[in-house]
Length: 194
Length: 245
Image (cartoon, rainbow over all chains, first blue to last red; front, side, top):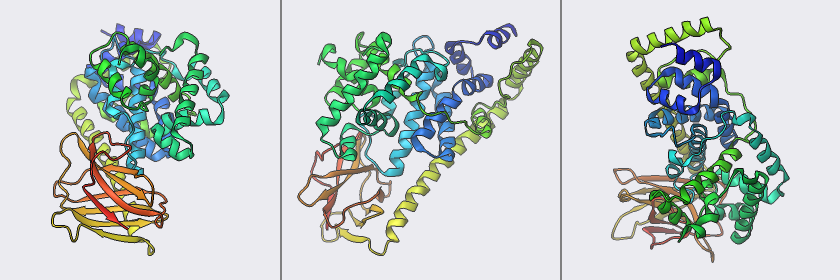
């Protein structure tokens, strides 16, 4: 009975195994989930809300939501880390919207959390070569191209809201968004296909 | 629209910034488990995940781990390079905890729920503080609406050039399922600018704040329309009510 745990400790288990243990309501699995992704989730939420205290609340909400919804997660089809990050981002953007009384984005947030829409990805996202490449690619973007990506991802602004914020025509902003996404995609080569 | 036409919208959809009709079309393809669009959006999500992972590193406080573990009723220590013996001991303790601590787990889940509710209440308090901040501005412009109308709703709008716009309404029935109220600030000679979504309470009252600077002198009216739940960038229906400045 102890063998699986020993093996897990010795070799590290997959996200799929971790999902199955979460679905069995194994408290230790929650600890491992936090140890695996907690820093990343916290860093993302702090980047969005820029307040450590609020970020703590939102991190807890994120893990609570995952704990409550993990039964519907297909471990063979979905990526746990990407799903967790999407939930975290949505909680943080939701907070920004409620705090600012802003209109909602073009896509309803729960819609973007559908677990089946997340491909499995490397466990060590923080040390991922692809993250480093995206970071470098973002730095290489022009100021406006980088701004639209950051406003969309980290502030949850729609393209119309970005145009208003930046004082630029909507068509210009849409062009910047598409160009920036293409640059990022090109930088990652064939690893990401749309 | 066919899959080829939607290909360029996958990443916009994954970012949450796809416009209609592409957004609805992508969603429809996903709902029918489209063999092209599902992997397409999943691929696009990889990029958005990687963007999220570029957030500057930030070290969470140690107490946060305990708060998160409370959700599952666990109190596991930080991950260490344990020896096999320690791992076996810990595993045994874990199994014992699972077997015997069901009640404690329920208590911890309840604690987590209460903490989450508390966080929501904190945010609501912040909203009310914003409302009071507007009310406390001596120069805030106040406009009464609905007073002379034969039918409710009625209420007041307060505008302060630095703090924002506050709407207080009564006799405003809750928006029907799938709909939501949206406030608009209408500039003189300009198009309505979205000013946030809100829902009225069961008793028909509503409080909505659009914080941030507003050009009071350049504002012709503040209006409210009924929109689809996702909100709109332009009003789609005549206003439920409008407060002319």
